[in-house]
Image (cartoon, rainbow, N blue to C red; front, side):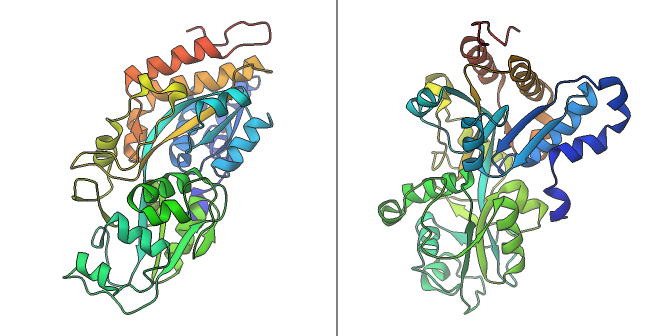
Length: 351
């Protein structure tokens, strides 16, 4: 299943719509690269959009760091990152960003006898595992949170991302908020100096290692956990409640986003309030150049995301992503109209 899941969007869309090729030979195809976090929903949207329009999306799921690099170097029509760029970073690079979907980063475990949602962890204990301060599953700190769970006297293997990753940023940002030691020693970025563990490339790589290594713990976007049948943990949120990942718990966090007040749509949704809130929630962002060297391609990117916002909500929810509400979509499309221009100053979005 994993091998099929990580195939190129170009291949997926091509296979799905071979019968349309003759009539859409002159359609403008678009390219993107970056975050693996939203890959499952971009794949679904791309397949459906290709059937509808004949336009193909070739999206490289290479990690947020790679996406930022490729859009900066103008080798793709758009970049994707789960780490939002600050307004000053956007200005320096001549970029705009806008959110595509909201989802959850989830710790996943491979502990014999432990099923999905059984293991309870607090933010502090999770941080101490990744700091290598807690090294066995029957450590007293874990047993205190799980008095009725039979935990083995075996070593914990940490699995983390080896590439520049927005999923890592979201995860590490959360750990920085719940552990001063993590904040002081490690911090949060797309690439960090991990205190311990095995590195996997992409959400796909982490999921693969976590699936194979007994006694492991890793972190992935929720759709990857479900696709690979990886047990997730129940995580204690800031209200003291142990919450399981779900679209409802992601929505509980997303409602605290103040997109209308966030310059450049800069919002981080980790450790938000609410009894039902999943504490490691984040948005995935699209990056584009304000001045479009190829306005036709830029306009096609916007048409794709406009179609996805309008027609892709059910697809997003089916994969446990939170779609952007209509009020936010209006803000996003106003930003397109005001900021994305061709070289002659003409707006490329006029809807």
